[in-house]
Length: 166
Image (cartoon, rainbow, N blue to C red; front, side):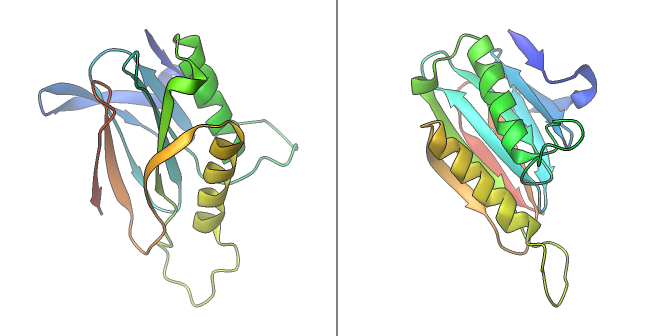
């Protein structure tokens, strides 16, 4: 099973530890059943990794803003839409909600400003935790907040995520 939210939402950028590495661009997602890595770079954006522990299918999204307020296109640019779309793609791939585990990354305050009135990173983290909790998907790992960005690699063979600060 190989599905993505839109064909231009990711590309193969070489290999990592001997497996193909698919990079996910902002406002997109990718679900893969084949052994590979799915990667993205996050600042204030958040990436939610889902993994089916029985079928060994993994998926990752990358969203920029917390909530779609009902105006304009319901795009995966928004956390509440992106997480639901990722869950939907995982279920279409044959996963069961009770077999899904989540790992959440990003949401950093990466822009140096005196007063962060918009709190985009913190709000992006909140929406991830809220939506996953509502869907009864357990968050088994997270690296969120702080002042630095992150590069993450989801290994679809075992659900492990390699992360480094950028």
